Image (cartoon, rainbow, N blue to C red; front, side, top):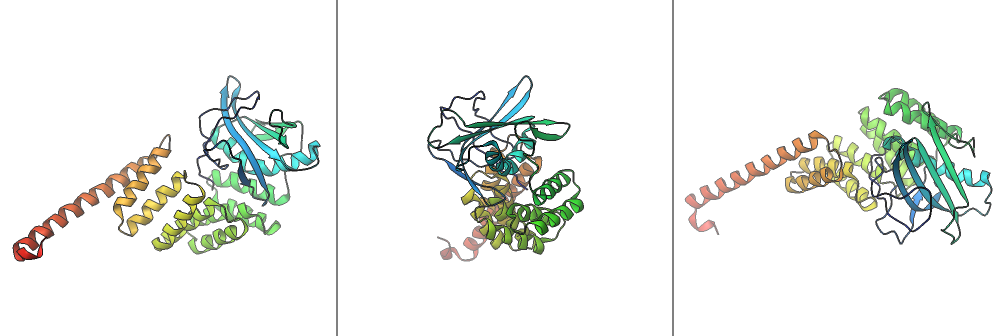
Length: 317
């Protein structure tokens, strides 16, 4: 699933929602640190959009999440724009859910005019359901998207078998739905079906080569199959695509331990811990275990050198 950290930056654009310095908890949408450049967002459907900024804010009436994007459609009517927003919402909804937001604002800009959006879509969550008054069909999507969203909810609830059935249905309805392959790969890892997970991640990368999560999922599966070299290669690729992905640092550390590269593993765990506001206790425990292992190796090496010096004094330099 999608377990990444998104950078939020400031732009001089007048809106009712101020950009903040906090990060989106899920980070499905990744932004660069340089606010002078757009970032390209590839959605599960394969379309690409230029994202201007993201942010979130807590108000008296709840938490808001915001995204600004540059529309490329020639038709500025609500129906045309809502198709784009529906596409983007596939990912933004994940950030909204994980950040605990109850309102999501999507600002659509056109051309070079970044002073005023051509349309603002307001999505509100009530009784567990998101809706948009300006575009009632927003968030419903195709049958493949509906199955995908249902699968994700089952996965969050820990119902992996039901989630797998719905991901199967989503892919059956739309075999080009890259994100469905990515998420199903994560479910298959949870179910211990590592070879099948690798196949799904590989298919996802054929459809969307810029998916850091697909590389991450495949790396985890390789590690579970005791193929740490392949795992590290995939984790490296994931970090090239998203340098601030704590789960990748965590899982690469585990693969590096398999390879006996304890110093690098400890460094990766330190990065993973630093990137999370509430790091898991097992990360500290694993890092402590690795550091003790390093200390034992240092003592053993010192003892070996001392023994060598006694037996062969001229062999030690």
